[in-house]
Structure formats: C-alpha cells, structure tokens
Amino acid sequence: MWALIHHTGRVHRHKMAIVRRGGTEEPSDLAIDPPPDQDGELIEWYRDGVNELLATLSAADPEAPAWSWSGDHRVAFWIRRMAQETTVHRWDAENAVGETGPIDAELAADGIDEMLGVFISREGHIYRGAPGTICLRCTDVPGESLVTLTPGGVPTYQSGPGDHDAVLQGSAEELLLLVWRRLEIDAVGDDRVGTLVTDFWRYLEGPGQ
Image (cartoon, rainbow, N blue to C red; front, top):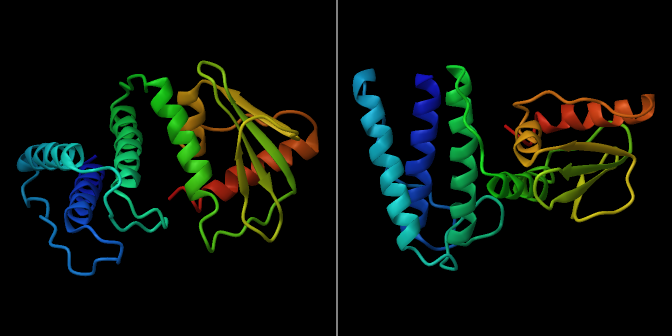
C-alpha cells in the first residue's frame, strides 16, 4: 500500500511540474518533492500533492502547451491522464483492503478509449499473437470499440461498431479494469476466438504497465 501511495504521489507531482513548466520539449530538470521518510506523514504528503495537482490543472488552459510522451503536447492530455491514473490506483488501494467503490461509468468509458487509443499502439510494443478484431462493448453507457490485431505489428483502434471476431462485453467499469489487467478475461466463442482474446490479454501486460 505504501508503495502505491509513493508511486501515485510522485506521478501527481511530476505531471504538475510538467504543466507548470509548459512548452513541448521534454523537461530534464524537474524538481519533485520526495515522499517523507516517516510513513505517518505519507498520507498528508499525498493529500497535499493531489490537492495541488487539482488546483494546477483547474487553473490551466487545457489547450496550453505541455510536453507528453504521447505526442499530444497539451495540458488537456494530462488532465485526462491524471484523472484515469488516479481512478485506477484508487481502485487498487480500495481493492487491497477489500472495499472497492464504484467507478463513474462515463469516466470508465473514457478510460477505455484512452487505453485503446493511446497506450496499445505505443512504439515498440509489437503484437505477436493470433490475428483478428476484438469488439469491446459497454453495457451501461454508449461505448463500442474495435481493436484489430496483426501479428508483427501494433494494434489499431477504432471507436465505434464494425466487423469483429470476438466480443468482450461488460460494464464500463469492468472493461476499464479488464484492459488495465485488474480483472480476468472470459474467452468467448470457439478455440480461435479464445486464443485471440487470450493473446490480446497477454499483449496488454506490456502497454498497460
């Protein structure tokens, strides 16, 4: 649990510093407030950081320049990324003590879109499994996404319906936690479809970390 708080608090401070710095060049000398040595002071350190991050992002122009690893060099990217980062790690913390609360369905649906549209096609993460297209379909809010998997390449993503070979269907929260590998998959259809879904699941271990 302490490692999770360390990680999330550092991420918040690092992205806050990026937004404050501005510009589209990757910064190399950001000063980040380290976590305290005493565990008893860690929660307050985390709270201070998340409150300061919220104030910084709320005051910033979403279209203002801010470097990111994604190529989208806008504050808007970090507003979305920090909302999703905090949501998933909030679930991690609650799950660790067996008391998970619900994730807003629209926030979760946006998180699925972010994961599939930003993370899965990151350079260097080559897919080596079975070919085909998987549909991820939300049951509680509008949301259907297609991921096309080609061996030796990176997956491609399309928001919206289309032809597919397999379906992963559930609430937006369930699918968000699934693509971030917090929940297990249920393979559907024949053996080929089962292999396709399993290979996609394995691929997510790289881009999702």
